[in-house]
Image (cartoon, rainbow, N blue to C red):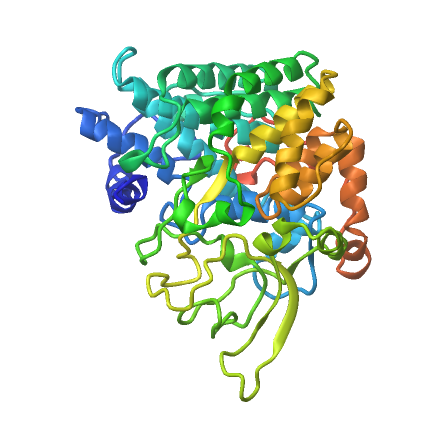
Length: 506
């Protein structure tokens, strides 16, 4: 099916040409701007809009945004994973996991600049099109700008707020805007997107955001504002109202079988907003599965699952053993759909076939050793969901509980539990129920770290510290503190700005 993935494959080459057009307006740290002459007709504006989505993909690099942000800088720092043993590669991953990250981290710098690249290109599209024209493309640009700012503010705290093309000299003079101002812009952008998009898109437009995604992200933003560090007392009720307005439509997209949520056959069917990937060696594949665990630099570590000479890039990351035992004991169906307990190191059963026991996240690994379209470790075809049905169900239930409406929340928690093969709750759900379901539901999807942070500084630091004692004592790591609840501002950003202070503790 021809859809956004096909456009992104074309744009993988087109983007390089667009970046070569030098202009005087820009936003640091991105150096090259897109020429205003590009936005001369609807075809080019559509290409520009889809090009913004593409910045969350590989973007001409070895890794994509989901790998760098949701895996390395989020899941990797949570209590769900641990490093069984260090390898000599991927030092950024080690430093993030052991809470030794500094402002010179290459991964942190890439995340920061990638998000601003999304903002820059969204600003360009909005600047070079008129209000009242190209409403859908403008709405998509505003959604993606809002998304980028939502990740920046929750991971880095206050940052520069830019909503139009700007010259470099002016950009570097911008202060770190207050978080409340950034959130106000995010909310405005998402409300615009929700008002000017269809609920969802299918066919050739599958994978592009609709109003359901805009409202779902708006509800998530309100829930983030309601928690630490902003603790906005008005935000929870606002989240509840937004979710109430879309819950019926989201329910119509609720996937009945958990394992089927992450298959190629069902991509863009149940989720609301995903990063799109496609195999074929064209630079549009996902790199996330390459960080499941470590392996030798050559050879195929998963011969029964992977075609050709697939290799791995990460440390020996494994799923917390207590979580594994809990899910097995409960016969939770989400376990087998998300985690494998090991793999055979050879296809032949005659000689030298060993089972390598490792609890590893394989949710985004396409297990098909006959798939010749997968050309390398970073050419996996599975999309990465940023917002899906369970996000809305569980965040809505959480908002309802916080507002004293736990009875209404029960049906949404039970829908998640039933899909996971668990018995329904016979009493009204509590926040503890929400926290448990989110922990199991989103394994490998990068939600856990941000959940812990918004649930409060004390809970976040104590939970993370309890899972980090091993690194502290055996692997020369350090116990997490308040400082680790944000990432550092990249050093290359501070070098160009005299009016920015580094985040606390770095």
